[in-house]
Image (cartoon, rainbow, N blue to C red; front, side, top):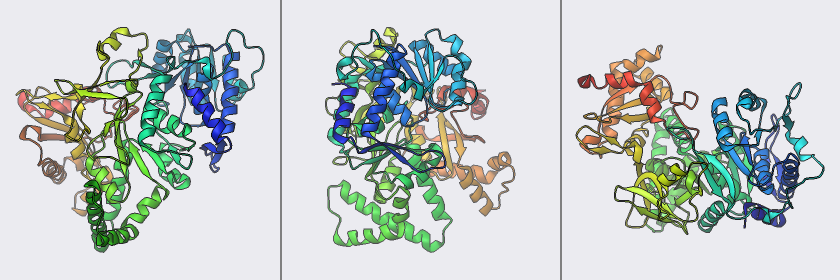
Amino acid sequence: MTLISLLDHSIKHYGSKPALAHKPKGGTYQDISYAELGEAVDAFSKGLNALGVGKDDRVAILSENRPEWAITDFGTLKAGAVTVPMFSTLTAAQVGYILKDSGSKIICVSTEAQLKKVLSIRDEVPTLEQIICFDPIEGETPEGVIQFEAVCDLEGEVQGIGVRNPSYASEDDIATIIYTSGTTGDPKGVMLTHANFISNLRACKSLIDVNESDVLLSFLPLSHVFERLGGHYVPLFSGAKIAYAESTFTVAQNMREVAPTVMLSVPRLYETMHDRILRAVQEGSPLKQKIFHWGVSVGSAVSSAIQQGEKPSAILQLKQNIADKLVFAKLKAATGGRLRFFVSGGAALPQSIAEFFHAAGILILEGYGLTETSPVISMNHPARWKFGSVGMPVPDVEVQIAEDGEILTRGPHVMKGYFNNESATAEVIDQEGWFHTGDIGIIDEDGFVKITDRKKNIIVLSNGKNVAPQPIESELVQSPFISQIMVVGSERKNLAALIVPNFDALKAWAAENGVATDDLSTMLKTREVQQLIQSEIRSRLTDFADFEQVRRFTLLEKEFSQEADEMTPTLKLKRNVIIARYRDAIEEMYPEDS
């Protein structure tokens, strides 16, 4: 059983049904059937063989989500080779590092912009023989570059490769090497086998019913294992249809066009949707605000009853129907009107966000996993879920909590190891086969896993108290005036925070309260704005211990971003980078230590 044999099964059973959909510039969504996908995969596989790609060779992919990504992935696997996916946002130097470390023989790029990155470092990668470009190339084609269509059209004898069929690769063969984005140090290549993915695929499909009637909108990077499994393999091995978003900036528009039934995202999308809804309510009339809050209270009552395993009363159901029409209809229409549920992963989903959406009649199922675990370790599912948790361990996956609180996992989902890095592998997989996740958490009395924080993110105060910053940050980012936050305080007496305000909301508040907004820097330093943020911090941390209170803060004028190397491609904060960059601002918050 391999990923290719599963694809062949889907092609046989769903041949004429749409497998993929993409939207050309200025056009409308166009479907690609399972049969057409199979033909393209076979043609590309033969083209790779003709280029000399054989068993265990590495083929890198540097591309945004699009049909060619899927074809390249399966075509590479069918050729017996290994895919090395990369985030399209990587710099040329980062691309060069991964190509050299993986020893990639071929790289497939999406656009001329991505091609330029590779051309600039090509001479530094001795193993790289060919560059395949998806988009047409204007002007003269550089030496060693070939168009995607040309590869699919290659003919001739393929020598020393063997017969291309599902049995060409075995379950234990490496299917992909995924380089961890990493918040510190160089990325490591995670080796995942066909068996790793298939075990995880079966576990997820046993808990969540994705079938041929489903449509998924794909916008998270396919280079990330979360989207690779949940938004790529799961739907294609279930007869579902995948529609690719044009970009991360068009997700809202594409949702309305595609009308997905299932969608995967990181928490940032849900937080943004939540913030926009609240902002629109605040700008509405007092009557509209009153109706909105009434609707949320009704939805919350329904949600509470469902969570307790009770059926809402007839009167409550009647109120819910009214609330749906008056309050939540627009939100559901914005998702396309057919959504069965959202799936959240990649980072912690604030419980209040999950509760708000469920009150609106939209279920967000949060899960947990890592690149090294293919990725799913635990997940909530439609039949059993608990907000504030990341669900229960999926079938065939063992989970236990170490003495220091670290989450350990063992099973067929755990990676083969880090590529060419046995010492790093030995550091995370012990002799009993337990993978040490680096996350701190608990398993509650009902068997649900709850994540506290990353082990390396724990802040140790000068009094010896250990503080997990993630719960604090997750609570404070719920403020309509706070967009991003990073708590600091290692070896200090108390906590402080670097805060990126929600500039739109803050400017609107400032204008209403007579605070000048002409100069952002000046506005952020005014007594009124400082007091506003201070009051938000105090009111939202009332349930936290005294040593977990944020005593000081600095308001920043720029958002943390990938471009500034302050966030990973999966939008996790690079804490060491941020601390180094804002060292002076942090020191100013601790005058007693200077």
